[in-house]
Amino acid sequence: MANVAVVGSQWGDEGKGKLVDWLSERADVVVRFQGGHNAGHTLVIDGKVYKLSLLPSGIVRGGKMSVIGNGVVVDPWALLKEIETLKGQGVTVTPENFKIAENATLILPCHGELDALREDATTGVKIGTTRRGIGPAYEDKVARRAIRVSDLTDEELLKKKIATLLTHHNALRKGLDAEPIDGDQLLQQLLDIAPKILEFSDIVWRRLDEAKRERKLILFEGAQGTMLDNDHGTYPFVTSSNTVAGQAAVGSGMGPSSINYVLGITKAYTTRVGEGPFPTELFDEVGQGLGERGREFGVVTGRKRRCGWFDAVMVRQAVKTGGISGIALTKLDVLDGMDELKVCVGYKLGDEVLDYYPSNMTDQAKVEPVYETLEGWQDSTFGARSWDQLPATAVKYIRRIEELIEAPIALVSTSPEREDTILVKDPFSD
Ligand code: GDP
Ligand code: IMO
Ligand code: MG
Image (cartoon, rainbow, N blue to C red; front, top):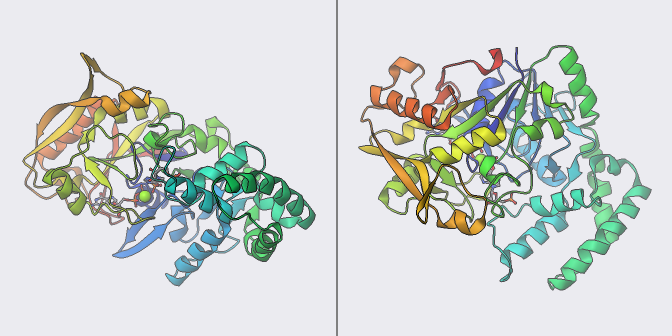
C-alpha cells in the first residue's frame, strides 16, 4: 500500500478537501505540511458542510490521526476558533486525535497586520493575499526570528525572542506609519494561549516515523496549488510556501521515499483568486456561467474567483514540476450543458508558440492562449458515481486532457458530496 500526497495542480481550490476526506477512509494519518489558514477546504457529507482551514481534512472522520506538520504556519487563535466551530458541528478534536509539530512556526497578530498594511500600500506589488499573515510569518521563519510552538513552554525564552522579533517588526512598522507593538502585551497574549495549544504539541517527526514502521497509511494534504508555489508558480503572485509534493517530506519531517504517489487535484476548468496572470481567463458570460454553476467564491475571504478554460499547458507543467503521478479531475459537472469547450494547448508569445509557461513576469502577462475546441455534452454528469454514467463526449474530454497533461486520471469528482466520486485507478495501490 502506498502513502499518497494530495496537492493542487492549478491556483488552489481544486477540491483537495473533498478528495482528502474521501481518501481518508482508508488512511490512518492525515498530515498538513505547508500553508496555514489561507487555505479553505470544503467537505460535504450527506448535505452537511464542513469548512477547514488549518485542521487536516481527515479530522471529520472518527478514528484518524490528524497532524499539523512543521511546515505549516499556525495562527493559534484561528486554530482554537476552528476547533470550536468543528466541535459545534459534532467533530471530535482532542489531544488524542490531533497533534501539532512542536517545531511549527506561529503566526502572530503583527503578521496579519503587516500583510494588510502591505496590501493596502500604494507602492509595491499588490498580490491580493488572504491577509492572514502567511507571507510575513514565513519571512520570519526563514530569517530565523520566528516564534515556534515549543517556545510557548519557556517564558524567559519567549521574552528574548519577542525582543528580537520586535526590533525587526517595529522598525518596519515605523516605515509604514503603524504603531509599534508592545512586547509585554504580546508576551501576555502568548502566555494566555500557550496551555491551549501545548496540549496538542507533539514530536511529529517521531510519531510519523512510528506510523511508518507500523505500516500505517499516511495521507499528506497540500494547500494552495502548484501555480501558487513560491518557486514554480506565477511569482510574485504566489503564496509564501512550496506547495508541491516535495514539501510534504520537508514539512512533515519524513524523507521523500515516504511519499509513494502524488495525486494532483485538477479542476475541469480553471479558477484563480487574487491578482496575477491568468491566460485562459474569461470575462464574458461563459466565465460568469462557470462561476455561478461552480459556486466559485473563496472559502476564506468570500472573494469571487476568476474563471476560465482548462489550461493543459499549465497543468502539464504542474505534473512535471511537482512529480504528479495521477490526477483527480474535479467539478466535471460544472461543464454540463455547454455546447463547446476550449482547452489551452500552447501559448503565443510574439511570433513563437510555447509549450510551457515562461517564468518571466512580463512574458507571463503577455502570453495568449492557443485553443483546441472540443465538443460539449448536454446530459448531466452531476452526482455520477461510475464511469459508465458519463456521456461519451465527457469521456472524450477527460481522455484528451489526460493525453495533453501527460498524466493518467485516477479519480473523477462530479459533485461536492463525498460519495459522488468515480474511482478509475486506486492511488493507494500504486
Ligand atoms: P480546496 O481548497 O482545494 O479544498 O477546494 P475548495 O473547498 O476551496 O473549493 C472547491 C469547491 O468546489 C467547494 O465548494 C467544494 O464543495 C466544491 N466541489 C468539490 N468537488 C466538486 C465537484 O466535483 N463538483 C462540484 N460541483 N463542486 C465540487
Ligand atoms: P486552498 O488550500 C486559492 C492565494 C491568494 C493570493 C496568493 C497569496 O484553499 O486551495 P497568501 O495569503 O497565501 O499570502 O496569498 O495566494 N491563495 C489561495 N488561492 N486557494 C488557496 O488555498 C489559497 N491560499 C492562498 O488569493 O492570490
Ligand atoms: Mg480552497
